Image (cartoon, rainbow, N blue to C red):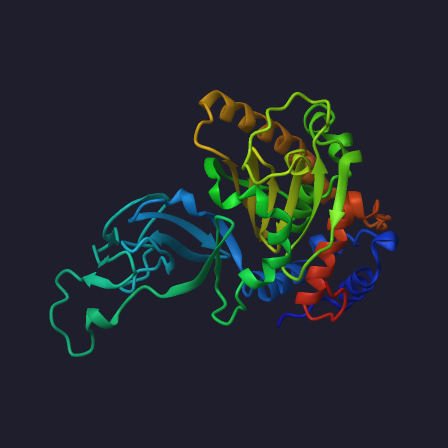
Length: 377
Ligand SMILES: [Fe+2]
Protein backbone atom coordinates (compact mmCIF):
# COMPACT_ATOMS: atom_id res chain seq x y z
CA UNK A 1 0.00 0.00 0.00
CA UNK A 2 1.22 3.51 -0.79
CA UNK A 3 2.49 5.14 2.35
CA UNK A 4 1.42 8.52 3.63
CA UNK A 5 4.28 11.02 4.05
CA UNK A 6 5.53 10.65 7.65
CA UNK A 7 4.49 14.10 8.86
CA UNK A 8 0.95 13.65 7.49
CA UNK A 9 0.67 10.16 8.96
CA UNK A 10 1.71 11.58 12.32
CA UNK A 11 -0.78 14.46 12.14
CA UNK A 12 -3.58 12.15 11.00
CA UNK A 13 -2.89 9.58 13.72
CA UNK A 14 -2.87 12.35 16.34
CA UNK A 15 -6.05 13.93 15.00
CA UNK A 16 -7.82 10.58 14.70
CA UNK A 17 -6.92 9.64 18.26
CA UNK A 18 -8.58 12.76 19.66
CA UNK A 19 -12.23 12.95 20.67
CA UNK A 20 -14.75 15.44 19.33
CA UNK A 21 -14.14 17.94 22.11
CA UNK A 22 -10.43 18.10 21.28
CA UNK A 23 -10.65 17.69 17.49
CA UNK A 24 -8.68 19.99 15.23
CA UNK A 25 -8.49 20.59 11.48
CA UNK A 26 -5.67 18.93 9.50
CA UNK A 27 -2.61 20.65 7.97
CA UNK A 28 -2.93 21.96 4.41
CA UNK A 29 -0.66 19.23 3.02
CA UNK A 30 -3.33 16.65 3.92
CA UNK A 31 -5.31 18.19 1.07
CA UNK A 32 -2.62 19.41 -1.31
CA UNK A 33 0.11 16.73 -1.25
CA UNK A 34 0.07 14.36 -4.28
CA UNK A 35 1.52 11.53 -2.15
CA UNK A 36 -1.51 11.72 0.14
CA UNK A 37 -3.81 11.42 -2.87
CA UNK A 38 -1.78 8.45 -4.17
CA UNK A 39 -2.19 6.73 -0.79
CA UNK A 40 -5.93 7.48 -0.80
CA UNK A 41 -6.35 6.15 -4.33
CA UNK A 42 -4.59 2.90 -3.45
CA UNK A 43 -5.93 2.49 0.08
CA UNK A 44 -9.48 3.84 -0.32
CA UNK A 45 -10.73 4.27 -3.88
CA UNK A 46 -9.18 1.09 -5.31
CA UNK A 47 -10.33 -1.03 -2.36
CA UNK A 48 -13.66 0.29 -1.15
CA UNK A 49 -17.25 0.33 -2.34
CA UNK A 50 -17.84 3.36 -4.56
CA UNK A 51 -21.27 4.72 -5.44
CA UNK A 52 -22.04 5.35 -9.10
CA UNK A 53 -25.65 6.53 -8.85
CA UNK A 54 -29.16 5.22 -8.25
CA UNK A 55 -30.72 1.95 -9.35
CA UNK A 56 -33.84 3.67 -10.71
CA UNK A 57 -31.68 5.56 -13.21
CA UNK A 58 -31.63 2.27 -15.14
CA UNK A 59 -35.10 0.83 -14.42
CA UNK A 60 -35.73 -1.50 -17.40
CA UNK A 61 -33.85 -4.47 -18.89
CA UNK A 62 -31.23 -3.14 -21.30
CA UNK A 63 -30.96 0.25 -19.55
CA UNK A 64 -27.35 1.20 -18.92
CA UNK A 65 -25.19 4.02 -17.62
CA UNK A 66 -21.43 4.36 -17.76
CA UNK A 67 -19.02 5.67 -15.15
CA UNK A 68 -15.28 6.13 -15.04
CA UNK A 69 -14.52 4.61 -11.68
CA UNK A 70 -11.15 6.05 -10.64
CA UNK A 71 -10.04 5.75 -14.26
CA UNK A 72 -11.60 2.34 -14.90
CA UNK A 73 -14.42 2.39 -17.50
CA UNK A 74 -17.46 0.62 -15.99
CA UNK A 75 -20.95 0.10 -17.42
CA UNK A 76 -23.90 -0.60 -15.16
CA UNK A 77 -26.35 -2.67 -17.20
CA UNK A 78 -29.74 -4.02 -16.18
CA UNK A 79 -30.09 -7.52 -17.60
CA UNK A 80 -33.12 -9.38 -18.93
CA UNK A 81 -33.33 -10.97 -15.48
CA UNK A 82 -33.77 -7.53 -13.88
CA UNK A 83 -30.38 -7.65 -12.11
CA UNK A 84 -27.91 -4.79 -12.39
CA UNK A 85 -24.38 -5.84 -13.32
CA UNK A 86 -21.27 -3.67 -13.23
CA UNK A 87 -19.35 -4.70 -16.34
CA UNK A 88 -15.92 -3.67 -17.51
CA UNK A 89 -16.76 -1.23 -20.30
CA UNK A 90 -13.72 -2.19 -22.37
CA UNK A 91 -14.09 -4.23 -25.56
CA UNK A 92 -12.22 -7.54 -25.44
CA UNK A 93 -11.07 -6.89 -29.00
CA UNK A 94 -8.97 -3.72 -28.96
CA UNK A 95 -9.98 -1.95 -25.73
CA UNK A 96 -12.56 0.49 -27.06
CA UNK A 97 -15.11 1.55 -24.43
CA UNK A 98 -18.23 -0.28 -25.60
CA UNK A 99 -20.92 2.00 -24.17
CA UNK A 100 -20.94 5.71 -23.50
CA UNK A 101 -23.25 7.97 -21.51
CA UNK A 102 -26.59 6.51 -20.63
CA UNK A 103 -29.15 4.66 -22.78
CA UNK A 104 -30.95 1.46 -23.60
CA UNK A 105 -29.67 -1.50 -25.62
CA UNK A 106 -30.65 -5.17 -25.78
CA UNK A 107 -27.24 -5.88 -27.32
CA UNK A 108 -24.08 -4.00 -26.32
CA UNK A 109 -22.33 -3.20 -29.58
CA UNK A 110 -18.81 -1.78 -29.63
CA UNK A 111 -18.82 1.28 -31.91
CA UNK A 112 -15.34 0.47 -33.29
CA UNK A 113 -15.68 -2.97 -34.95
CA UNK A 114 -19.18 -4.01 -33.86
CA UNK A 115 -18.13 -6.71 -31.45
CA UNK A 116 -21.36 -7.47 -29.63
CA UNK A 117 -22.18 -8.56 -26.05
CA UNK A 118 -25.43 -9.48 -24.34
CA UNK A 119 -26.60 -7.61 -21.25
CA UNK A 120 -24.70 -10.01 -18.97
CA UNK A 121 -21.45 -9.17 -20.77
CA UNK A 122 -21.21 -12.44 -22.73
CA UNK A 123 -19.57 -11.94 -26.13
CA UNK A 124 -22.02 -13.01 -28.85
CA UNK A 125 -20.83 -11.32 -32.06
CA UNK A 126 -17.36 -10.98 -33.66
CA UNK A 127 -17.83 -9.95 -37.31
CA UNK A 128 -15.38 -11.56 -39.81
CA UNK A 129 -13.24 -13.19 -37.10
CA UNK A 130 -14.25 -16.65 -38.30
CA UNK A 131 -13.17 -19.93 -36.73
CA UNK A 132 -9.86 -19.82 -34.86
CA UNK A 133 -8.12 -22.42 -32.74
CA UNK A 134 -6.95 -19.80 -30.24
CA UNK A 135 -10.25 -17.99 -29.72
CA UNK A 136 -13.83 -18.96 -29.00
CA UNK A 137 -16.27 -16.14 -28.31
CA UNK A 138 -18.19 -18.43 -25.95
CA UNK A 139 -15.22 -18.24 -23.54
CA UNK A 140 -15.05 -14.47 -23.72
CA UNK A 141 -17.02 -11.91 -21.73
CA UNK A 142 -16.73 -8.47 -20.25
CA UNK A 143 -15.36 -8.92 -16.72
CA UNK A 144 -17.91 -8.20 -14.00
CA UNK A 145 -17.07 -6.15 -10.92
CA UNK A 146 -18.61 -6.70 -7.49
CA UNK A 147 -21.72 -4.58 -7.05
CA UNK A 148 -24.36 -4.05 -4.39
CA UNK A 149 -27.50 -1.98 -4.06
CA UNK A 150 -27.98 -0.19 -0.74
CA UNK A 151 -31.01 2.07 -0.15
CA UNK A 152 -31.39 2.41 -3.93
CA UNK A 153 -27.75 3.40 -4.46
CA UNK A 154 -25.56 1.31 -6.76
CA UNK A 155 -22.14 0.54 -5.32
CA UNK A 156 -19.29 -0.99 -7.29
CA UNK A 157 -15.87 -2.09 -6.07
CA UNK A 158 -12.75 -2.69 -8.12
CA UNK A 159 -11.56 -4.91 -5.26
CA UNK A 160 -12.73 -8.53 -5.77
CA UNK A 161 -12.07 -9.26 -2.09
CA UNK A 162 -14.00 -6.32 -0.66
CA UNK A 163 -16.16 -7.27 2.34
CA UNK A 164 -19.91 -7.04 1.65
CA UNK A 165 -21.32 -3.56 2.22
CA UNK A 166 -24.80 -4.31 3.58
CA UNK A 167 -23.77 -5.81 6.95
CA UNK A 168 -21.54 -2.80 7.63
CA UNK A 169 -24.49 -0.46 7.08
CA UNK A 170 -26.83 -2.15 9.57
CA UNK A 171 -26.35 0.51 12.26
CA UNK A 172 -27.24 3.28 9.84
CA UNK A 173 -30.15 1.30 8.37
CA UNK A 174 -31.78 1.38 11.80
CA UNK A 175 -31.52 5.20 11.87
CA UNK A 176 -32.83 5.82 8.34
CA UNK A 177 -35.20 2.88 7.88
CA UNK A 178 -38.42 4.91 7.95
CA UNK A 179 -37.35 7.27 5.18
CA UNK A 180 -37.32 4.39 2.67
CA UNK A 181 -34.76 6.00 0.38
CA UNK A 182 -34.90 2.83 -1.71
CA UNK A 183 -38.39 3.86 -2.86
CA UNK A 184 -37.38 7.35 -3.96
CA UNK A 185 -36.97 8.30 -7.61
CA UNK A 186 -34.19 10.39 -9.12
CA UNK A 187 -35.46 13.37 -11.10
CA UNK A 188 -32.26 15.39 -11.51
CA UNK A 189 -28.68 14.39 -12.33
CA UNK A 190 -25.69 16.56 -13.27
CA UNK A 191 -22.03 15.82 -13.85
CA UNK A 192 -19.58 18.55 -12.87
CA UNK A 193 -15.90 19.15 -12.20
CA UNK A 194 -15.07 21.23 -9.10
CA UNK A 195 -11.63 22.68 -8.46
CA UNK A 196 -11.24 21.45 -4.90
CA UNK A 197 -9.87 18.49 -2.96
CA UNK A 198 -12.27 15.55 -2.62
CA UNK A 199 -12.01 15.60 1.19
CA UNK A 200 -12.79 19.32 1.30
CA UNK A 201 -15.99 18.58 -0.63
CA UNK A 202 -17.00 15.68 1.64
CA UNK A 203 -16.30 17.80 4.73
CA UNK A 204 -18.23 20.74 3.35
CA UNK A 205 -21.28 18.68 2.45
CA UNK A 206 -21.31 16.94 5.82
CA UNK A 207 -20.65 19.70 8.35
CA UNK A 208 -23.47 21.92 9.56
CA UNK A 209 -21.28 24.66 11.05
CA UNK A 210 -21.27 26.68 7.83
CA UNK A 211 -25.00 26.38 7.07
CA UNK A 212 -26.07 29.56 8.83
CA UNK A 213 -22.87 31.47 8.04
CA UNK A 214 -22.32 30.75 4.35
CA UNK A 215 -25.85 29.84 3.27
CA UNK A 216 -27.56 32.75 5.05
CA UNK A 217 -30.09 33.34 2.27
CA UNK A 218 -30.58 29.72 1.24
CA UNK A 219 -30.10 26.70 3.54
CA UNK A 220 -29.97 28.71 6.79
CA UNK A 221 -33.69 29.42 6.37
CA UNK A 222 -34.40 25.67 6.10
CA UNK A 223 -31.66 23.91 8.12
CA UNK A 224 -29.93 26.38 10.47
CA UNK A 225 -26.68 25.39 12.15
CA UNK A 226 -28.23 25.47 15.64
CA UNK A 227 -30.52 22.53 14.75
CA UNK A 228 -27.65 20.20 13.80
CA UNK A 229 -26.78 17.07 15.80
CA UNK A 230 -24.32 14.22 15.41
CA UNK A 231 -24.85 10.45 15.44
CA UNK A 232 -22.17 7.84 16.18
CA UNK A 233 -20.11 6.78 13.16
CA UNK A 234 -19.96 3.17 12.03
CA UNK A 235 -17.12 1.43 10.27
CA UNK A 236 -18.43 2.30 6.78
CA UNK A 237 -20.55 5.41 7.39
CA UNK A 238 -20.82 8.56 9.43
CA UNK A 239 -23.15 11.51 9.56
CA UNK A 240 -25.31 13.98 11.37
CA UNK A 241 -28.82 15.35 11.61
CA UNK A 242 -29.93 18.76 10.33
CA UNK A 243 -33.28 19.82 11.77
CA UNK A 244 -35.79 21.74 9.69
CA UNK A 245 -36.82 25.16 11.04
CA UNK A 246 -40.01 24.37 12.99
CA UNK A 247 -41.99 27.47 11.98
CA UNK A 248 -41.16 27.07 8.31
CA UNK A 249 -44.09 26.39 6.04
CA UNK A 250 -43.32 22.98 4.72
CA UNK A 251 -45.50 20.29 3.24
CA UNK A 252 -44.89 17.09 5.19
CA UNK A 253 -44.40 14.66 2.35
CA UNK A 254 -42.88 11.25 2.99
CA UNK A 255 -43.31 7.59 3.76
CA UNK A 256 -46.14 6.76 6.23
CA UNK A 257 -43.62 4.96 8.48
CA UNK A 258 -41.98 8.30 9.36
CA UNK A 259 -42.44 9.82 12.80
CA UNK A 260 -43.13 13.55 13.25
CA UNK A 261 -39.55 14.03 14.45
CA UNK A 262 -38.18 12.26 11.38
CA UNK A 263 -40.36 14.36 9.08
CA UNK A 264 -38.70 17.42 10.66
CA UNK A 265 -35.14 16.13 10.30
CA UNK A 266 -32.72 15.86 7.44
CA UNK A 267 -30.22 13.00 7.81
CA UNK A 268 -26.76 13.76 6.47
CA UNK A 269 -25.00 10.55 5.49
CA UNK A 270 -21.51 9.80 4.23
CA UNK A 271 -20.55 6.39 2.88
CA UNK A 272 -16.86 7.13 2.45
CA UNK A 273 -14.91 7.61 0.44
CA UNK A 274 -17.22 8.77 -2.35
CA UNK A 275 -20.91 9.11 -1.43
CA UNK A 276 -22.61 11.84 0.56
CA UNK A 277 -26.37 12.15 0.97
CA UNK A 278 -28.61 14.89 2.31
CA UNK A 279 -31.60 12.69 3.09
CA UNK A 280 -35.09 13.98 3.93
CA UNK A 281 -38.63 12.66 3.90
CA UNK A 282 -39.77 14.53 0.79
CA UNK A 283 -36.68 14.72 -1.38
CA UNK A 284 -32.96 14.13 -0.96
CA UNK A 285 -29.68 15.00 -2.60
CA UNK A 286 -26.55 12.98 -3.25
CA UNK A 287 -23.05 13.53 -4.56
CA UNK A 288 -20.76 10.82 -5.95
CA UNK A 289 -17.27 12.23 -5.56
CA UNK A 290 -14.07 11.13 -7.21
CA UNK A 291 -10.66 12.83 -7.16
CA UNK A 292 -9.19 13.82 -10.53
CA UNK A 293 -6.16 15.43 -8.84
CA UNK A 294 -5.38 16.93 -5.43
CA UNK A 295 -7.43 19.99 -6.34
CA UNK A 296 -9.95 18.71 -8.87
CA UNK A 297 -12.98 16.52 -8.28
CA UNK A 298 -15.46 14.87 -10.63
CA UNK A 299 -18.91 15.04 -9.07
CA UNK A 300 -22.17 13.38 -10.01
CA UNK A 301 -24.94 15.34 -8.31
CA UNK A 302 -28.51 14.14 -8.01
CA UNK A 303 -31.89 14.79 -6.40
CA UNK A 304 -34.35 12.00 -5.67
CA UNK A 305 -37.96 12.35 -4.56
CA UNK A 306 -40.49 10.39 -2.51
CA UNK A 307 -43.64 9.63 -4.51
CA UNK A 308 -44.40 9.89 -8.20
CA UNK A 309 -46.72 12.90 -8.00
CA UNK A 310 -44.16 15.69 -7.88
CA UNK A 311 -45.13 18.31 -10.48
CA UNK A 312 -42.27 19.57 -12.62
CA UNK A 313 -42.40 23.04 -11.06
CA UNK A 314 -41.86 21.63 -7.54
CA UNK A 315 -38.93 19.60 -8.83
CA UNK A 316 -37.56 22.71 -10.55
CA UNK A 317 -37.85 24.65 -7.26
CA UNK A 318 -35.88 21.96 -5.43
CA UNK A 319 -33.26 21.83 -8.17
CA UNK A 320 -32.86 25.61 -8.04
CA UNK A 321 -32.38 25.67 -4.24
CA UNK A 322 -29.88 22.82 -4.58
CA UNK A 323 -27.97 24.54 -7.38
CA UNK A 324 -27.87 27.86 -5.52
CA UNK A 325 -26.59 26.18 -2.37
CA UNK A 326 -23.99 24.18 -4.26
CA UNK A 327 -22.86 27.35 -6.06
CA UNK A 328 -22.24 29.00 -2.68
CA UNK A 329 -20.23 25.99 -1.55
CA UNK A 330 -18.29 25.87 -4.82
CA UNK A 331 -17.01 29.43 -4.43
CA UNK A 332 -15.72 28.66 -0.93
CA UNK A 333 -14.22 25.32 -1.88
CA UNK A 334 -12.43 26.71 -4.91
CA UNK A 335 -10.92 29.44 -2.73
CA UNK A 336 -10.02 27.07 0.08
CA UNK A 337 -7.20 25.50 -1.96
CA UNK A 338 -5.30 28.80 -1.88
CA UNK A 339 -5.49 28.94 1.90
CA UNK A 340 -4.51 25.29 2.30
CA UNK A 341 -1.34 26.02 0.32
CA UNK A 342 -0.37 28.90 2.61
CA UNK A 343 2.90 28.46 4.53
CA UNK A 344 1.28 30.34 7.42
CA UNK A 345 -1.81 28.22 8.01
CA UNK A 346 -1.98 26.36 11.33
CA UNK A 347 -4.96 24.01 11.82
CA UNK A 348 -7.64 25.40 14.15
CA UNK A 349 -10.05 23.74 16.58
CA UNK A 350 -13.21 22.14 15.20
CA UNK A 351 -16.59 23.29 16.46
CA UNK A 352 -17.69 20.14 18.29
CA UNK A 353 -19.59 16.99 17.36
CA UNK A 354 -22.96 18.57 16.47
CA UNK A 355 -21.47 21.03 14.02
CA UNK A 356 -18.19 19.62 12.69
CA UNK A 357 -18.18 16.08 14.07
CA UNK A 358 -18.25 14.62 10.56
CA UNK A 359 -14.83 16.11 9.83
CA UNK A 360 -13.24 14.09 12.62
CA UNK A 361 -15.32 11.08 11.50
CA UNK A 362 -13.81 11.35 8.01
CA UNK A 363 -10.27 11.69 9.34
CA UNK A 364 -10.76 8.70 11.66
CA UNK A 365 -12.13 6.67 8.74
CA UNK A 366 -9.12 7.52 6.56
CA UNK A 367 -6.71 6.77 9.40
CA UNK A 368 -8.33 3.35 9.95
CA UNK A 369 -8.32 2.43 6.28
CA UNK A 370 -4.74 3.59 5.72
CA UNK A 371 -3.62 1.35 8.55
CA UNK A 372 -2.80 3.96 11.18
CA UNK A 373 -4.56 1.73 13.70
CA UNK A 374 -6.43 4.45 15.53
CA UNK A 375 -9.84 6.02 15.63
CA UNK A 376 -11.87 2.82 15.67
CA UNK A 377 -15.54 3.53 15.07
FE1 LIG B 1 -22.69 24.21 2.17
